[in-house]
Image 1: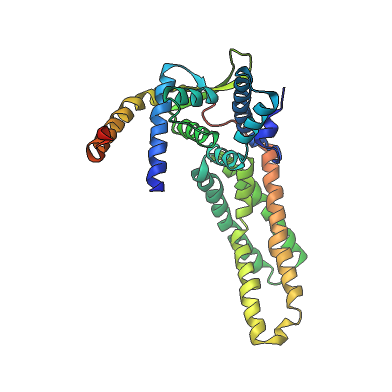
Image 2: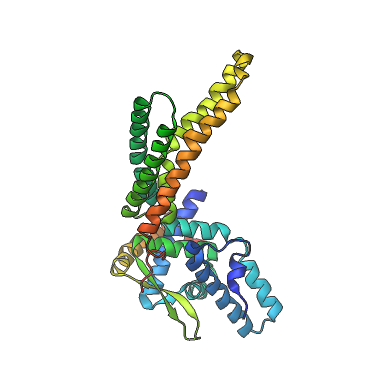
Length: 112
Length: 216
């Protein structure tokens, strides 16, 4: 269960981060904050899970990072999508849609 | 302004390889702190919340560093592969020197030291070509002696105690012999290999460490 749980979390974090970064470039804290706000506080990424996810996506070549000055005048490490990362969004979304649809049909989430 | 790096890694010795990781995590804490302050939290509360968020980040830092350095694949490619190839050559040289000088002589030991320096240099340079960083290169050189070290450890910690159980007279002089073996067959070549590796690192310095995916 915990293995499935971690796989689901890992997969969901990838699609969420890719979608957020497809809108604009962000630094780590901003990404975490956006996820929390857009999910009304349901999804919350601690530092120990957010940064490994970002670095894993860097390793995969889906993201690239660069240091820049934030609007507040601070040095921040920003992330942006690579072409490869942009190409991953649609298939990831499609597979998540299928997964959630199947889960809904089996577990009747709509009636919950 | 606070030094958020100290909150991220309070007890960690500043490792150059971790500088960028620690810097990034410190930025996260700084953003968190600034937001809390903007929200009206007192200095003490903000620092307490941020310190709690930054607590126990040691494993995360190690994990990020490990992944940033390429993880297991890089270790296999840049450490194990050159180490094993040069270990083979070390074995061949050792046998050849043993055949030439049947009994241990100063010339034989001196030759082994020189061979070890050369092989340490080669292992380190080979590792660099395969993407190894400084630490990978040192380990690649150290692995050259690993087979011999394992064999000697088996002798010392397994065979010798068994012999001692069978024959107490075996005890006479056995420790001196082992000390000699460890000194001349493991420690001396290992030091020579590391010296060879350091010469290589000096001659062909590693590229500056940046996290993978970071662009200028």
